[in-house]
Image (cartoon, rainbow, N blue to C red; front, side, top):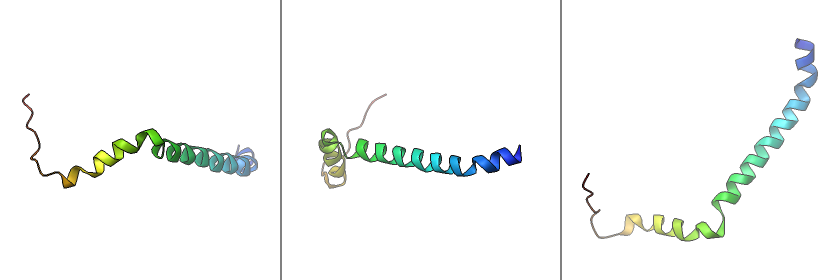
Length: 58
């Protein structure tokens, strides 16, 4: 069992790096998508708003 895992260690390490790279690239593309720009601009303006937050009734 340990010999099998030791022999697969380099392959699994390579697959892990490839998986992490694809995941990281996907997250970056999701965040930097052009259609999300306005949403981020609105969120960035929240601290600069002068009006008090609206109170919601539950």
